[in-house]
Amino acid sequence: MKTLVVNPYLPIPARCTKIVSQTELEKLFRFEFLGKTIQENFDYLPGQFLELSIPGFGEAPFSITSTPTKKEYFEFCVRKVGTVTGALHDLKEGKKVGIRGPFGNGFPLNDLKGRDIIVIAGGLGLVPLRSLINYILDKRDKFGALKILYGTKQPKELLFRDELKAWEERKDVELLITVDAVPEGQEWSGNVGVVTTLIPKVEMHKDYTAVICGPPIMYKFVLRKLDGKLREDLIFLSLERRMRCGIGKCGHCAIGPKYTCLDGPVFSYEEIKNLQGAI
Amino acid sequence: MPLIKKQKIPLLVDKMLKKFDVIGPVPKDEKYVFSKVSRGEEVFLGYDTSILPPKKIFFPQEETLITFKKDEQLEFKPALEDGTPSKTDGDRKFVIFGVHACDIHAILTLDKQFMEVYPDPYYISKRARSLIIGVSCREPKETCFCGIMGTYTVEKGFDLFLEQIDEDEFYVIVGSDEGRKLLSAYPDFFEASTEETLEKLRKVLKEKDEKFADSVSITGLPTLLEQEFDSVNGEIWEELGEKCLGCGTCCLVCPTCFCFNVVDKVELSGKEGLTKRVWDSCLLADFAVIAGGFNFRPTQTSRIRYRIYHKLKYELERGGILGCVGCGRCNIACPAGIKMQDVIKKIKGE
Ligand SMILES: Cc1cc2nc3c(=O)[nH]c(=O)nc-3n(C[C@H](O)[C@H](O)[C@H](O)COP(=O)(O)OP(=O)(O)OC[C@H]3O[C@@H](n4cnc5c(N)ncnc54)[C@H](O)[C@@H]3O)c2cc1C
Ligand code: SF4
Ligand code: SF4
Ligand code: FES
Image (cartoon, rainbow over all chains, first blue to last red; front, side, top):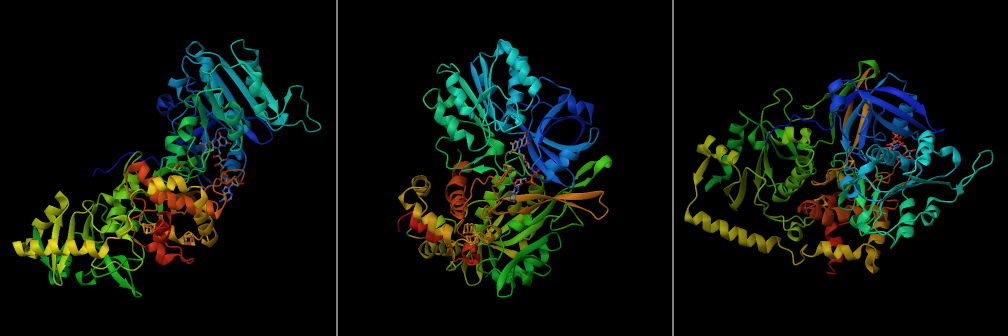
């Protein structure tokens, strides 16, 4: 038996270079590793995640929302829900955190290249999908059609508004947005209804590849709407589970015999269709 | 193959103590625990089962992973030596003397979990310094079901294995080069076996099959479980869910359970602290809760069903290894009287 040098539990310091408020609860954080060569050599796939550590508060997994085509930094978009996310929301530009990763499989770029793609995002699900969308847009000729369906509970929860606008204006992207409801005092002239109501509004042939991410309850309904329309091996879902280690050791993220952190977070529908407790 | 006389074993341990730390089963309040010994006589090879399995040596209940400095001084350092048997001499090897076959199977399961894919340096730092000397069990305790799991014998995962062939003799099986080296390092304690001892060994092993093997086996269990998830017989999960208190004790005593939580602790100064891992249990209500409060296993029924599936099906599917070795510790520890072998028998319709 050989003793090891690599320690997958050891965070590497990174500095926060920019914070942009997105909504009441979400902020976009830009980071750079302290060592220039570390940052230059840092590579990842859209759909992978990192463990972010704020010493004393703890560690939590976050999807990388930037695209690997931008080498100078990486970004998270984080909702404030508890201890670590609360401490992160209190962080100021210039301050440091610890980072481990990237972990997980990421979106299957090989299955996506050359294909027509439909992206379906619910709420915070847009965070990892933004990485994929911007990756596709940066390498536009490598991919076919790109249709994006995005839904949130209410208009004020929409993320990345500037980018949504830019995507909407592009001829090579079809973007449809909807909100579940429009509470009094908020302005909205677009679609109203859950994200599944957008599916019949877009034209798709059987060979479209679907990439889906949203809150746990969303998957069932989206899959029901897509049933029979697309190939099961070409529907990809990015799943969330509780995670502590990110490296297949702590057991928290298990779905049956699979570990979301190792075998996922992206699974094809074919792979998990019969998996107990997946959807 | 060599032989060792029972009365020579404490003397061998005394000799080994000059070079190694030795951890063995010792009596404690009418039960047994694996503990560091300072004299060979302390090792009690006639023990039935230990409260905690040897797992705690490689994967302690609490273990510091990282020490850190906060804020502008931010820095992370690995804390590798914490919790290892010998703190003063990090490279000193240690011998775990007297591990039963079922617990050796469990170590193989842990090896798979901690040494593959992202190898775990904390586990490996201790495991790489360990020598394992197994010892046979002569009678199954009434709580044990190694007969069902097929774990009352073991072929690998040890350096030496002592198979008792009569009241005062053990046949020594060599399981590794390190084991072979032990034999040549302590030649005075072993003697060569004869045709007669081999005959005794064969007889003992045959009797063992009669004594330990169960009419129920785990063959076909994963397939049966595939069908039982929420079918008509789903009742057995409801029944278990109602009984189980969700205390998590079964996981704490289990030799194959590896789940852990990770927590930060800040020193009084507020400037530095540490990140440690602590044993966790999938039977605790919040084990699979995510932000927003959504629980992927919201009922005790779903949680105990998950544990049993993990033990009897998922672990086999993942790595072809056992998630349960039939050691019976959970049976002894469970305040609700849930017995794993009863669950197996029920699923198998026996
Ligand atoms: C692969 C992956 C990618 C992710 N990507 C993102 C992302 O891009 N952006 C983002 O904002 N989030 C993301 N998340 C979710 C994020 O990891 C969690 O929001 C974060 O872990 C919460 O940590 P916290 O310390 O702030 O919350 P905690 O203080 O741990 O708790 C937050 C909430 O979780 C629940 N909870 C936690 N622990 C318990 C418990 N013991 N008992 C009961 N309830 C409990 C409660 O509802 C609580 O309010 C991702 C998760 C995964 C697995
Ligand atoms: S589940 Fe129970 S019997 Fe099986 S290995 Fe764990 S403690 Fe032993
Ligand atoms: S020890 Fe018994 S009661 Fe406690 S969690 Fe395990 S099965 Fe449930
Ligand atoms: S997060 Fe620990 S096993 Fe997946």
